[in-house]
Amino acid sequence: MNPRADGVPAVSAHSSRVRRFTRAEHWVHRVTAALMGVCVATAACLYIPQFAELVGRRELVVRVHELAGVALPLPVLAGLASRAFRRDLGFLNRFGPHDRVWLKAALRRDKDHASRPAGKFNAGQKIYAAWIAGATLVMLGTGLLMWFTHLAPLTWRTSATFVHDWLALTVGIVLGGHIGMALGDPEARRGLRTGSVSRQWADREHPLWRP
Image (cartoon, rainbow, N blue to C red; front, side, top):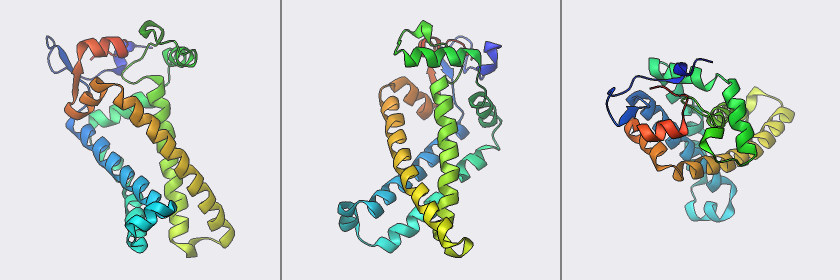
């Protein structure tokens, strides 16, 4: 694999910081995160009695949950207008030999950076992106069956409710892990917030990425 394939142009060839994300990618992530947060928060208010009693206005909460869920794919679709975003989707969708090495090291809990080669995105990030994208589509499909009850027979709607509820719980757990990982890496968060990261961090965490 050509390691230079996982790169984006640097802010400056001599800068101590390198460009990781564009403004468009920043906003795709931020808006998607906000919509996902609304979905999770409203779901909690619908399914946890203590939250339901605290918030009340169940009909309004249901409507907000439905609208946020339907809107969830829109930031990604809008982001397709960005060449940098499309390029990063290609990187996320490309699983190379070095990613298998990274996964084996992660399973061994080997934290040596030399044992975890990664391009712009590591194997864990690629798996998470693929899983959350698939889960979002399943949640959207099952949610529509629950919302528009005339679209399918009762058996389908019952099955959709079962899948939607349990997958929602799984999504909440996975998102918690995602947020926990982000909290443990301030420089990665800074990269999403400002678009650039330190060259030292890039060389350490993503040695095959050549910005």
